[in-house]
Image (tube, rainbow, N blue to C red; front, top):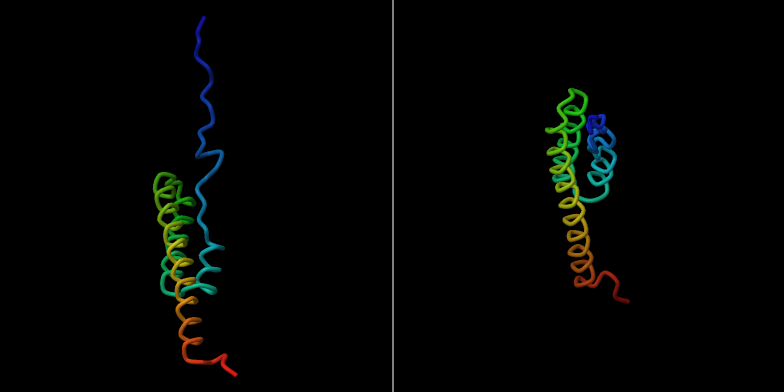
Length: 95
């Protein structure tokens, strides 16, 4: 008797890495354009790697894309806070 079981489906096949293209577009428009464009570029690279069957490359590119998305959101929020503080300090809302 053999104890060999059939090969299990790998987790990469079950859940391919995400390209985050929608999030890249949203953060580019709503948060901070320069880093958003970089995130969008890496999203396209991730998508291309998935289409070409380069799963290992797609996984690493997906991680890079996610990091750029986080940086874009953080910079966008920080910039909004700084701009709001400057506007308040200039007395834009004083009676």
